[in-house]
Length: 353
Image (cartoon, rainbow, N blue to C red; front, side):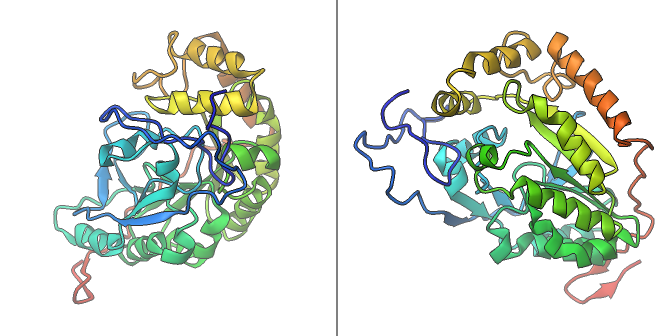
């Protein structure tokens, strides 16, 4: 373990490494007192001109997504979105979870884009990159504003989040669900609260996520659980317990994503393993390599999310069997509907169709 890379309380990453667009990196003083305050979150204005992001990956079941925030306070050390911060001259490390770019006009931009005659009604994902219900959302309510727009247009939305804050918006989700236009997946990586605090430090605790599943199910919102990412040697043994707990709280669907470590995520996770699980580091990394043709990540569609090889195949079979045991994925997912979409001019509040 290198000096100056001890864990930072409340943060997933312990460093701000240089990225592929620069040779400059920031290092903490080796004499840094770990009792000092952790880096404070900074809000940066994102002057994006559009809010809908198009996806061309066959691995993801949607074409358009909304990302109200870039960067994520949740601080999940494994987050595949970390390298995206490097395009703004920021590090994928502590910067990613402490310098958050905020699209404060996202609801207005979304209304404008959905009102265009050329918009073809279809499912929109919240989000495609970082979590739309990260801690800042409690105060800024940008995601809620986007949901209000989607409700007004009756445009279907699929949400995935690790934060129980989503239950704040049950009123909007109920409205959308009246038109078969809402579905939610709650991501549960582990049921171990202590592990959560170091693996994904600012997410909701597992018990609260399960309660969120129950609240959504009781409200009639289609809800499932996403076991993601599956970390070999750290969380893979919990799959049965996670699926059983989710099903008992009302989840009807389940999916999973195996761990992948693109670009700057790999060294960050290696540092995290050295700090927290030095005895398992090689086992974890070798298992990941076994699923990705000897690499820590591959970009091949179809293989990057689930992996290939003996371990990936065995896990896939076990997951299917466990879903059958707990009554998950018994029926094919009900398609979200665009039948009730209505277009209107948000500046005049007039319906066009």
